[in-house]
Amino acid sequence: MPLLGAETEYGILAPKRHDLHPTALAAAVVDAHAGPATLARPDPDDPIPIEDAHNRFLGNGARLYVDHAHPEYSTPEVTTPRAALLADLAGDAIVARAAVAAGERIGTPVRVFKNNTDGKGASYGYHENYLLNRATPWPQVVEGFLAYVVTRLVFTGAGRVGIGRASEAAGFQLSQRADFFEAITGLETTIRRPLVNTRDEPHADRHRWRRLHVIAGDANRSETATLLKLGTASAVVEAIDAGALRPPMLADPLGAVRTISRDLRCATPLELADGRWRTAVEVQQEYRSQVEAAGSADSEVLQLWGRTLDRLAENPMMCTELEWVAKLTLMESFRVRDDVGWDHPRLAQLDLAWADLDDRVSPYAALVRAGRMPRLTTDAEIEQAIAGPPTDTRAHLRGRLVAERTSDVLGIDWSWILLQTPHGRRRLSLTDPLGATAVDLERAGNLDRFIAAL
Image 1: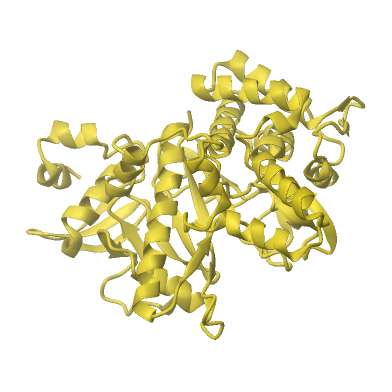
Image 2: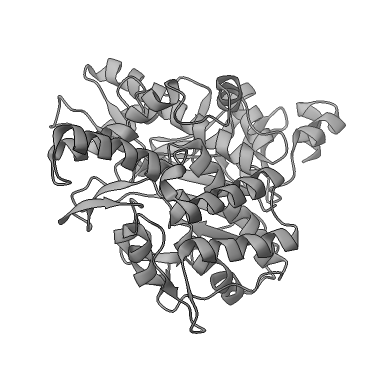
């Protein structure tokens, strides 16, 4: 499996203080984080730039910062889909708790939302990151990943009330992000958003690693959708890396995104470049078959992927563990009960409440408590992911130093740490993302000996 991780930009609002700018609210959330943290800064002798004043690395190896007026959480690097799911959920909990603390400090409630659009034309991202072999040709990556990332909306969509960027038309669609993509490939993330992003910042040895920065994905509350999203993408990337994929090619990928997002039956045939017609589910089934043959998928993910696709092919509304299905079911029950159309403002309000990280008000959280949305993790596992870093990547050393040597960390980034030691300042190079693990530290005897060796 390739190294993987995710970044979430959270929507933010102070309902009783519309005069407070979102950037100030986001900064308040970052500053209110109660756990061990250290300021991310390139040089301890330089003044802190304004944009870096609310930028923290945390004791669990993650990063919490302000980005484009949103609080953003980047998970630590992990090696398995399940670890990625736990790291993602840990981020939700950290941000939710910091929002409560920020509200207490500034004297007004602060709400944070795990969604991707305000329904009025603005979109903010959920990004995935996968490290793959630098030797893998980039055109091979694009060719292998494109049809996969377009058609996976059938199980990764978070559901959205409104059609069009600013909800110009009434209705419901599978994906929060589908209306915001304008290019096949490109570097941008906020304008002319591409289906396959070309940003290549591996934060590692560039001669060995390439980073696939995926922006074409929804932020999910559903644990099943999140595991499928991260696990299947990781498996597809590994198959691409191994040269074991013969991917189907869509004739019109951009058109297909919108078609799939609006197809609540998941049954509309899409034209392929070779003249065949296949539904999004059938394209995913082809990917799954090739991934299974390549032996590149986590067994839990492979089985869940297969079961989900089979039921989507039979009747999508059976898949109530998927976010868009659960949300649509809830919306339809409300529409029938109150005899309202999709343009009713209460539906948009319900959509926003779903994404609210305050479990006291979120319909998603209510469904979890009622046993109608399955959990794949436990609260204890999430707390462990909040409290400490992964053991099998360089995030372990980063988290340990932030938690145990906070005052000695003078500068920090994903691939290096500037540390004050008894022998002066030492810059620790962490360009190997699979180094500086718990096993490496144990072999050295203790943390000080490992640092001395570095």
